[in-house]
Amino acid sequence: MDSVLDTAKLLPFLLLTYMAMEYLEHRAGAATIRLVRRAGKWGPAIGAAVGVVPQCGFSAAASGLYAGRVISLGTLLAIFLSTSDEMLPILVSAHASPLLIGRILGFKVAAGLAAGFCADLCRRGKQEERGNIHELCEHDHCGCEKGILKSALLHTAQIALFILVINFALNLLLAWVGPENLSRWIWNKPVAGQFLSGALGLIPNCASSVAITQLYLEGAMNFGAMISGLLANTGVGLLVLCRVNRHRGENLRIIGLLYGISVAGGLLAGLLPGV
Image (cartoon, rainbow, N blue to C red):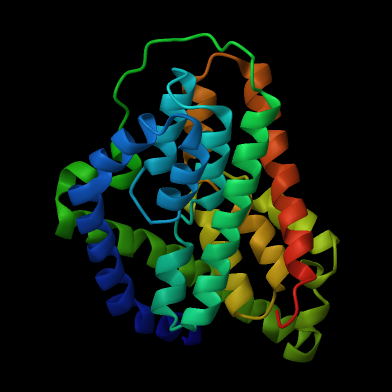
C-alpha cells in the first residue's frame, strides 16, 4: 500500500513533466538533430549541451548518425554521457532540490564535454569511412507519432509502473534488513558501488535510469554511484548503435569506453564535498 500511495503521488507531476518534454520534442527535435549534424569540430560541445535536454529518442538518432559517420565519436560520447533519459522527470516529480538537479546535469555536461573533445583529439587525422544514413525514429520507444497527450500518458504509465515495482522492492528490503542497515548495502560501498551502478546503467532500457534515480532518492545509493549509473545510461542509444553499426568490435570498444568514463566520473563525483 505504501508503494502504491508513493507512486500515485508522483503521477500528476510525471504527466506534466512528460507533456512539457513531448512538446519540446515535437517543436525542436528535428532542429536539434540538424544542429548536431552541422556542428563540425564543435560537435562534442553542441552534443553535450543539447543531449542533457530530455528529448525523445535523441540518443537513438545520434547512434544512427554515428553509424553513417555523420557525427564523430566524440560527439556520440558527449551525447551519450549527457543524456538524462528518465532521471530528470523522476527528480522533478519527487520535488528534488534545483541545486541537486543542477549539480547532476552540470556534471553530465562536463563529462560529455571532456570525454567528447578528448576522443576527437585522439582520433584526429584518422579517416573514417563514410556511409549512407537514413532517418531514424524509435517509434516503439518514444511514441512520437501518437501526439503529445497520448505519448505523455504512455510515458507516464510506463515509468509509473517501473517506479511502483522498484518502490515495492525497496520497501521489502527495508522491512527485511531494517532502515538502519540500508546504508551498508553494496550500492553505497565506495568504489564497488560505482562499478556496479555503471554496469546497471549500461542496460539499454529506461528501467535502469528509473532504478538508479529511485535508489538514490531512497538513500540506498550514494551520489558517486548514481553519477556512474546515469553517465553510463543512454536510454536505447546503445541498443540502436549495436543494431545499425555493422562494426561489432567498434561497438564493444564504445561500450567499454563509456563504462570506463562513467565509473571514473562516479569516483570523481564521490570525492566532491557536500554530496
